[in-house]
Length: 252
Picture 1: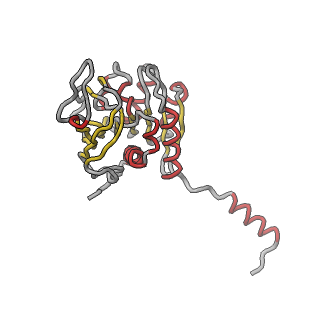
Picture 2: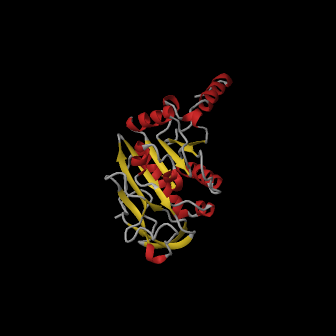
Picture 3: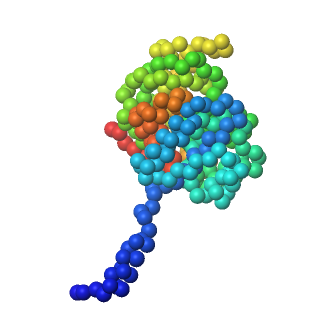
């Protein structure tokens, strides 16, 4: 069968107009601070953007709450990542919009100082699961896996060295938390001027179903260099993947 030049040109145009394969999902990467501003923010943003390229999901980054914390914008995303946020960053209308987003099946991912954010918003503190209290100096310590059967956990050794700013937390604000990682306080100096540490059980990462949606949190990620650590990045992606899709993972 022979095609005319016009037919070939039309076929080429149609093929060229074919839509690209859709991304797996889209996330909002939110980095607004109203308190301490971590030096690692830019490294964290770049790392999440690279994870998006590696795992084929869309990333929209902003620190402008006025732009995205409303019903129309939030509806575009399967998960919202609070990356190194601090302080009171949303007004009442924005808080209400975010609550509606979660109740409609949306998802939250909190990284490090997301637990040092919005202490006066009870709904948020319950979603985060524990709120930051104090921390000692950055130190190397032993991370312990509490649950391997969750996305992104399979690359951790049962006990492994990791260097971070080890947050001490207040009591759990939710009774639905499943813990993924803890830190062994005997492996570093947890004491501060205000505290002797959390003791035998010192949580680092956890997740829960929350108010119609999903919430994942990791306290790791203080240092810019951590965002070059493939094990940490896989852990972070696992939390994003679960939050955005609701899909679990069996390591064993």
